[in-house]
Length: 406
Image (cartoon, rainbow, N blue to C red):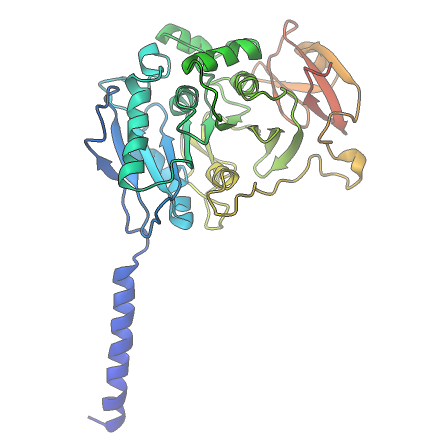
């Protein structure tokens, strides 16, 4: 063998060995979704799945993510985008799964009183999963969040109401207010056309879920497609009314802005946020792609609009920065101050009228029998002459709800 080969081959072998060792020790996506048994008494008879990224540090955050009807934990884990950010930013996931024996459509039973009360049923099963993760994965109990789609979103509202001492925040994707329904029959009317209650009446239902609780309550995000015919967009307004009342803030946003994918954001004192995705049907918003802000897989209940998991994870500070995603103030047609919505509703007079009158006057528009404010796309409820709202213009063809100011 030539002398130079005798000298070079050992070096090549060493490099190859090093590469091989690196590939074995830090494989991409080596962690897997794992079924967990024995996590508690499990009165709701749910299945627990967990995901712990490689290199998960002690005191990492935890996100509980709940699937919708006809889905399962693997489906939501694979398509909703949460795995990408768990790997990227190192937090744990818990994915409860419904059994067909409990519900023929695999829906979480958000409408059954026995499953939506503190200390029992499915709500307690989910809480026991959090306890298991806190003990066995050493996650930070102060940074536990919950989210879900449809029935999973309604169950998210259940968890925020019944266990405000467990969760720091929640994101309700195409969901419904807590205790909107207490039976299968009433569940359908809650879903569509929706149930209208005063903010105080909605808030009382949450306060009764843990009577006497005086501690800090979780922040709430509400995501909804404006063309959702399964769970009517009016539910986004009712959810807003419920949680702004519970958290003690006005039903008038302190600021409004625009995000990608035709998404409008109304911010209520950083305690409640409402994201309306223009034209989206009943789905989790995703944005397939390899960029940091892209995630998920488009499908039946996953619509290619905006990566909600990215924006929600950043809003919760799971990226380590604790910063809210950058949003563009709306409208953006002109850089002059007069065209940018003010953080306080002072740009124009407040007009109170029926939804029908608002649409007729050009302050709002209707889609699928529901009314939305022009510009902000805030849900106003059914398109008729009976429901009234106050609207304030904050820019050219841009209106925000101002019920308490009119």
